[in-house]
Length: 602
Image (cartoon, rainbow, N blue to C red; front, side, top):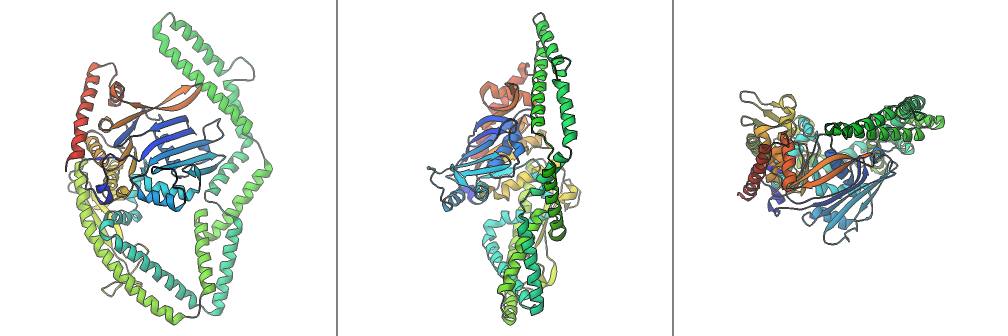
């Protein structure tokens, strides 16, 4: 959601008005440690700050759930029967999302407002768009146009070369987007005709045998009724059922230690007694007051833990019939995995391909000669487009490398060199390029792409996986988010701890880049660095507190002296030092002018 220093602004992002406001409000109920939370957000750059473990990432997780990310029933707050997450967007600047809404017939909220909500109960979710029932697929389709979330470990995707061509094509979409679309259409037709030709060339006996096998496979998988994620849920349940007695013994023992079977001799009794004694002593010596408060918090936590253990014991049961059913279902899944794939997702993918092939064979006519001629034509036609696409990619690769190097220099890597390597693999059965040579091809083209980096002076260019550290990858991802990702399309960008592994001057450079990104997008960033927090337009402090004997997450929009105090905390300086407060005041005053300069420079 944010960036600093001057970015090469591309595409629709460059035309977007400043101070875009997309995500207006996030409402969360009974999600993880959150009981009730309503976070109002503003335009520009917003930072979430607070101690480690305060719950900042839980807020991002809640938003992800509202956008359709997978979440289990364990996300429901203990003691509640359901959780709710709701995100309210002003979508005037996102026509793609509005188009998806209109196509689904749900565009009646008025004034271009989109409300995505999700209720989680008993492991199942109820999805709503603009307060009307919707599917998970629709929620995800709309959400991907509204928010781009960069998680804590997303930068690791940069070391996987299968993603590199996608990054390059996102960067070059303005220059050769039409070629990409033309190639996708041509290659799709080529693949379909080639498959039809292969099926038509089967003998009658081979065709019958193949159809029998495909029908058996399709029927076997269909009858199983597999669901994505089912195996993991079943394995978790089997473990719990198989060890029910051990679990009961362990949890009951822990509960007895805390509360006991009577009113004496327990850990909780000892804590309460200690609390009472120290509280009484604190009336005579005020220096004991912090210790009394600490004892009170420990006692409250122990009581809450005891209640949780008691609830667990009430829910735990040994059900041999259910265990047998779970084991039987897992055996059925294992048998299917031995035949069709290493996961349920792979089995379902096998099913889709097998069903499509079966349909083709059943409907195929004896037209081998016609199909052979068409395959030859399409090899050359799609190959010519792939060749043009490859040339366009070569040009974009050079531009991207220069831009990345320039941005890395601004982010504390002045000697970094970056290169985009494009290669082809000769394959006589592949697409025929304009040089008359056949090349291996897939739906992305005939190019294989990988990124190379030399992070320090004197080092040779090498693949990212062998040279980049975590901090360097974080900075690279920030660069890619700014110049070659979907940030031209997605008006709300969220960074969950993009500052991992950096500090000092580099942290200030990252902060400036976040501000610059927020010229054309609403940006939210979870951070622990004061260099980033000082440049934010808005700052939200996240903290845990104990309310009614339960730990909850609370947020506070800090401004004025509250923000100064939070900045002092982030600086790691004692809040009692006047110099620290003066320094924080000065940092915020200077940040105002710096933000203005970053957003107004040409």
